Length: 293
Image (cartoon, rainbow, N blue to C red; front, top):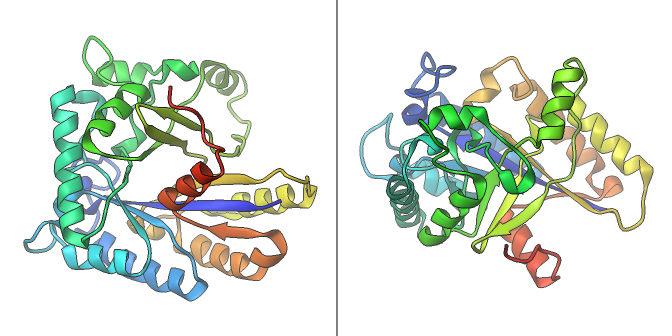
């Protein structure tokens, strides 16, 4: 039994801070300073991850809006660079031409910056949540899109396929899970292996966890303790570089403890870190991926 972890960083930069109610007061340089700390720590423990970057940060220009040198450093360190849109746009509020534009412009900017393919897309705020094919209905996306849903997960994939992307991180909650949360609001949310679907040739990776605190460590230890033959799993976890300064599951203390725990247990628990592009292509070679819908 093996556990594969895909750690993703939403690299918002001040472009994202400006439109996020939780980050408007953040130091404009905090993502950059925190990323330097994160890169050093990950290198020390041999961990590869994914940085989903807003495209404008990869363009030439002065700080704090632009920092192509750091994005090149991320790529040079062996981490995957993905798109986080061009200017941290709310996807459900965009029409299809606008979505394709932000997808294409950000992809070109990032690829020009690092000189390599950008295969993945991480939508800001993890939206859209609306995914009828998985019985997930989002009234939040209905409000964001006006009088109708501008985008669902599957329509997002259609647009991303036109831009040349290979994978997208998604977050959605099926109706039965929404009902359970309302009936038992105090119950801890279950951590489940990531779900893979494919729409228009773009693979979706359902997000599993925010951060890397003791709850995640305890769950991984308990899962591995079951020792079920053949029960390999993959988990998608995420955080924000500036999140290491926040007193929540993304805090630096949790990250430092989690990376130490990984180094101490990776062999015994058969845990590895990888990137979505590498993992999906390995699964594809083994014919384990879902068929395109």
